[in-house]
Length: 106
Image (cartoon, rainbow, N blue to C red):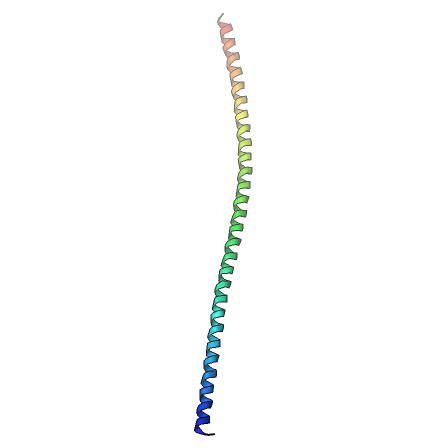
C-alpha cells in the first residue's frame, strides 16, 4: 500500500469515527430527553396518586367525624334529657315539700 492509499484509509477511518461519535452523541441526547420525559411522567403519576390517597383519607376522616358528631349529639341529648328528668323530679319534690310545709303551718 502506498502512502497516499494509507492516508486515504486513515482519512476515511477518521470520517467514519466522527460519524460514529456524532451518532452516539445524538443517541445519548435522545436517551437523556427520554429519561427526562420519563422522570416527569413518573413524578406526575406519583403526585396524582398522592392526591387521590389524600382525598380518600380526608373523605374517610370526614365520614368518621360525622359519625362521631352524631354520637356526641345523641349522647348530649340523652344527658340533657336525664338532667331535665332529674330537675323535674327535684322540682316536684320541692313543690310537694313546700306545699306540705305551708299546709302544716296553717
